[in-house]
Image (cartoon, rainbow, N blue to C red; front, side):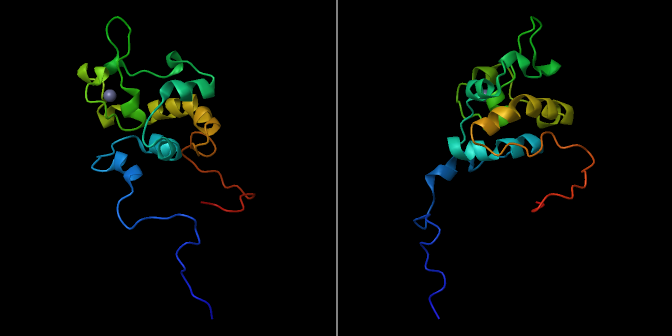
Length: 153
Ligand SMILES: [Zn+2]
């Protein structure tokens, strides 16, 4: 009875080949912190991989100076040179001025503590902009057992 798998039901036409919108993360060694990766996933899908930090900060009601810094990525004069595009997504700027100063961080420099602070600062902005963010804010070490969740993930 009926024909299963008509193909058009989901309203998404994929022409069999390569969706160019996927290309921003192709050939990418994604070394971001897993929590940051989770927070940014939907946002980056929507922006085609672009990180508009000012937009996220604005939506979160924050300033760039509210973001945490890493001592390894701050000049002696106090000016941070960490490449936020690279922390939050994929920096594809060929002449990234932060990269030129060594501001593409080593993944092991992005600590849990740092990631939590980033999420604290930006998650609200991501949610405001229609992203999924990190559900329930920064995840704690111990997951609370909630009895009211209809669909635990
Ligand atoms: Zn960069």
